[in-house]
Image (cartoon, rainbow, N blue to C red):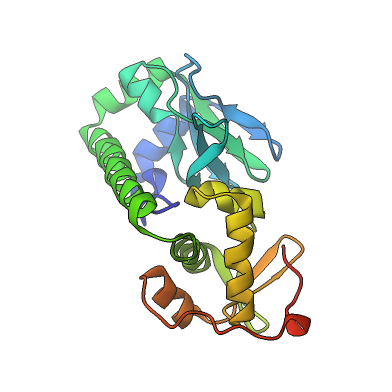
Length: 242
């Protein structure tokens, strides 16, 4: 399952005139880090068009934990499902950092889609992609190890939101261990163990809220469920964890 949306965001895929028309329908909003932008099971129907920053989409589980479904960034819309089907919110959206957005009421968003078949097609494609991604996630949880799922998440973060740095690729969205755990459906303890394996094999380097991928080739092999497994190093040479 991908944490990210499609290669082209909803706003990017819209013709310029339509994009301007949609943003003109709403009001600007600013969310500080940690602010809940949309709450699961709420009956509101507004849509948020994200202009900057990153937001986390998550759901609560029966065990009282949280499962991260996606990361949404500039150009994407969140809250569209409730606006389209008028049902309760299916997930919580939380600002990961400072987020700037435009809030469009559900009624105005539906009128916008009704007048623009291309925009409706884009939304339906987006909803379809999310359903397919959820199917992949269910198979992953049933058949893949924590190490494999973590490797896949880190590789995706490096490819989609990484920058070249000293000795590797620095993740621009530094998720803490509890968020990494929530992103792969594992416990924090299991993620800590898997991260230790990756550090000992010189696949990643971790620090205070920072992860650097130092060997993308091995990380991708692990994500695909094939070797080599990280080779252990001596404990005294292992850098500190996140």
